[in-house]
Image 1 (cartoon, rainbow, N blue to C red):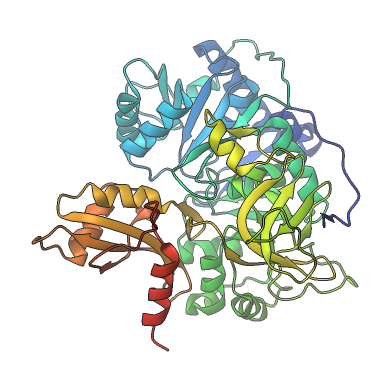
Image 2: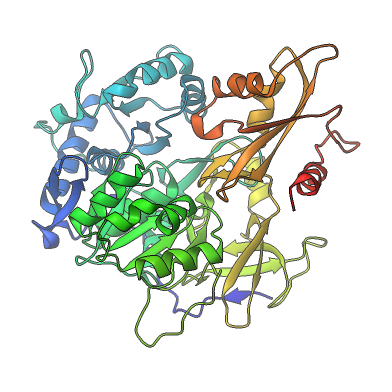
Length: 532
C-alpha cells in the first residue's frame, strides 16, 4: 500500500534557492540574521541580502557563469551563507566540501564534478591548493578565501565590487543548486544533484511541521557543508526570519555558554550532542532555560536517551526527523509541540511531510508492499527527490526506480497512526556521528597496505552508542601487523571522521561465491563476542 501524508499537499516552489531563502530579507530588515558565536559579530537580514548580491557581482566579474561548479570549503562562518547564495545567484552550482577532507579526497571531488572555482579559508588554504593541483593543471580558475591570504583574492574584496548584479535565467526544475556528496545506500561518494526546485520545495514541506520565525534563535554547530546543516540550520531559519548563531565546531563548554549567552530557543543536533546534554556534568553549570525544542536527525536516536535529555532540560520530548541527502533531505518530522496536540510516541522519526508518499516493501520480495506494523525497506516519492547522481546513471537507476520511488536502504515500520520508526538499515553505510562513511572506501585504503591481504569494514557500536568503523584484517602470509599500525595507516589517508577505530584479525574474510563480502556474518560474529 502507499502511505500518504495527512497534511495538505503544497505546490512545488519554482524559484531559485537564494530568492526563496532571502526573499523576505527586506521585510526582516535590521533583525539579526547571523551572529558569530565566538566573537559576537552580527549581520542583519539587510546586510546579508546586500552582501550576497555584491559577492555575486564580484564572482560574475571574475568569470563565474551559469553551469560552473564552485567548491565551498570552510567550517561554519558568517561568510558561508553569503558565499553560498552569492554563487547560486551568479548561476553556479555549489559543491560542499568537508573542511577536514584530505587533499586527495578534495581533489577527487573536484575532478568528479568538474569544479572551476574554490572558496576556502586561510587555515585550509594549503589543502585547497594541493586539491587544485590534484584536480589537474588548469582545472581550477581561481581560489578565493573568505578571510585574508597573500596571493589570493578575498570574498571581503568582492564586497566592494561595482560590477552589475548578475541576471541569470533559471530553470528551477533542472538547474542544480547544490551538489553535496553522498555514498547513497552503498559504495563510494557520488555527487547528489539537488535542484533549486527540490531544495526550495522541501523547505516548504518542512515548515508545515516544524515552523520557525523571527522569535526563534537557532544554534548552528552542525556543519553547513552537510545537507542537514545546510537545510535545517541555514536555509530554513534564514527563510523564516530566525536568528542563526554560528559556531565553527562542537566544543561542549562553548556550545553550552553560547546557548546561555544568546538565549537560544532551538537546537538541531545529532545523537552524540543529545547524549552530552543528557549526561555531561557541565550542563548543570549553565542556564539553558531559553530552549523551547530540540530536533535530532542524521543518525538513529535511542528513545531512552531522548527521554533523559528532555527530562534533564525540562523541554518537550526531543523531536526526530528523517530523510537523506538524496531527498533534499527531509521526508518525515515530528511536528513542533502545540498545546493540546497528541504527544508523539517514543522513538518515532515523525510523519510524512506534505506532498510525500511512502511504501514499505518486503525485503524478500521488493515488488510486495507491506502494511502498517510490518517491517520492510522504506521507499519514498515526492518533489524533494534529487535529480540524480552526477555522471552516474547506473547508480541513479539503482536508487530511483522507473516509477520515481527512491529506495532508501533503511528498514522501517509505520504504526496505525502514521508514525514511522526506523529499525535497521539494509545498506552497509556507516554513520559516524551523522557523517557518512562508506566501508568500500576504507577497505580500499586497507588493501593498499603491503602487509594486508584482505579486509572488510562494518559499523559497530561504541560505549557511547555511536556507530564506528571496525576493520577485520587478514595479514599477508608471514607478515606481522598490529592494531595500532592498521589504525594509524588509515588515519593518515582519510578524513578524521572516517578513521578505523577498532581492528580485529581474521584468517579469512567471509565472502559469497560472487566475491561479495558477507558483512552479516561479521556482524553476527561481533554480536556473539560482545559481553552480555
